[in-house]
Length: 149
Image 1 (cartoon, rainbow, N blue to C red):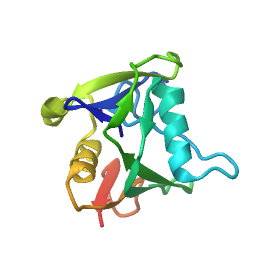
Image 2 (spheres, rainbow, N blue to C red):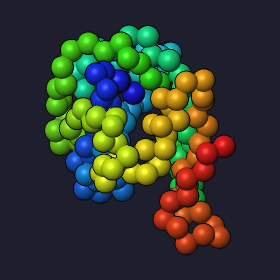
Image 3 (cartoon, one colour):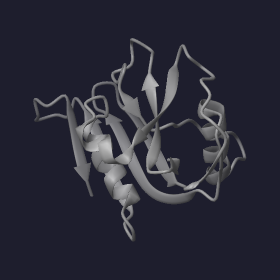
Image 4 (cartoon, rainbow, N blue to C red):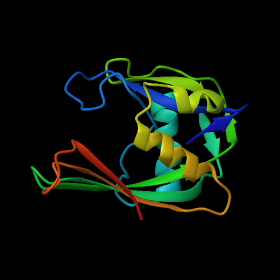
C-alpha cells in the first residue's frame, strides 16, 4: 500500500465478472519465479500504478478462501510512504488507480468494509494484520465472512 500526502492508492476494478467490480481495493499481483516478496511488491506497484516505491514493510497477511470451489490464496500486505512518480492507468480494461484520502476512507462506499478494516490495522503502529476472508463458508448465509485473527 502506497501512502502519500494523507492518501492511499486503491484500484477501481473494471472486470465485470469480478466479485469486486467497480470497488476500490489495494493494488496487488503475483510473485514471479525466484522473486522475493519485497521485489514483487515494488514491481507490481509500478506495473499497476506507474508509481515507484521504496522500502516496503511487511505489515500483514490475509488468506482468501472460497469453500465452493476449493480456491485458497494468501496475500501479503506491504506499506510504504516512500512513493515517487504520478499515477498512470496502465491496464484500463482491468483497473484504474486512484488516490483516496485516508480521512474519507471510512465513508467511501466503494471500498469494501473488510478492506477499510484491513487498511486501518495495516496503518496502525506496532500492529500486524493476520486475517481471513471466506466465501461460501459452510454453516453461514453470509456471502463473505471476514475474520481478524
